[in-house]
Image (cartoon, rainbow, N blue to C red; front, side):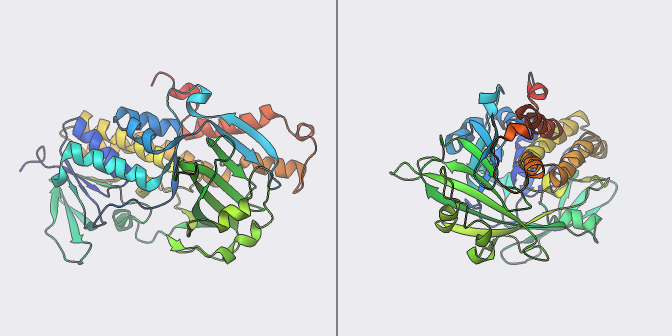
Length: 417
């Protein structure tokens, strides 16, 4: 088998891996996805798909399936921890974008992508129960070392003309090239959960309350009509600084007592936050971590994509969007350089490394909730009578627009694409 015939191997069947596989299939480029879990299930909590993510999903033809199982956001609203409105703005198509902003259960998103990839590529090209433990290279190909996840049994290596690591923040492939790297923990832990309740406001609002200094909460609906009582499934994320000295485990069941004291007084006329948290179906605990940006993703016939390349704080709803952009650009470069995989991967790196770096650093230092932090800085940690005495709505809009520009979904940037 020559290099032109060898498939592209994609390590990881998450958002980046599955969207890349569908892009490559559409361009007639053979690829195989190896996913570590034995069975793909509907797991996780909420995620927001911003217009630039939906632009990519629209190009893949899965937008209608995602809209059918998610909720289209009409607006985003920012409140202080006393429940006072600071700023709000229309979102997605309601703000003039061609593409919507969708709140969705992460598991439902994953299943839509997984089923679409299975239908297009076939089950033989989307292989589960396979974990990558390393990649070797010679001049002609890369050899992917795999084990069967469920048993730990070593499997014969798979030959590939290029290997794309889409295996997440704890990427085994990335660790091969950066063995001494650790995750960056900024002193913030998060608790996440879902609750069933009547719609908040119009049932189409993405809500941020409070700042990281005094306790922050993000709240938005992800499933409509969850029962015959007209309730929605509401996703919430609590961010608290300094409760623990180090990062907690991933997907660890959360304990209400560890963080509830921060929110027990949050009873507003528009939402009883404390009650919502107490009545949640479950609570998970996550660390707020990313990794320091690196100046190289590509090593010969191997490159990194998605969270394996640029893990970022889960602020601003941007991780999924950046992963889908990676996938599209990678497929374009592999099509442009059909006989030189190394050149294709370097071209992808040159196009994406700089923009991703900006988003990672902005999510650390100046995320969208900087709007609330700015008001808290000007007013103090207290209710206000007239916010206009301290800051104008135009100034707050400028902060919001700045993040959109850096993150790649400013309205003018998406028009005509």
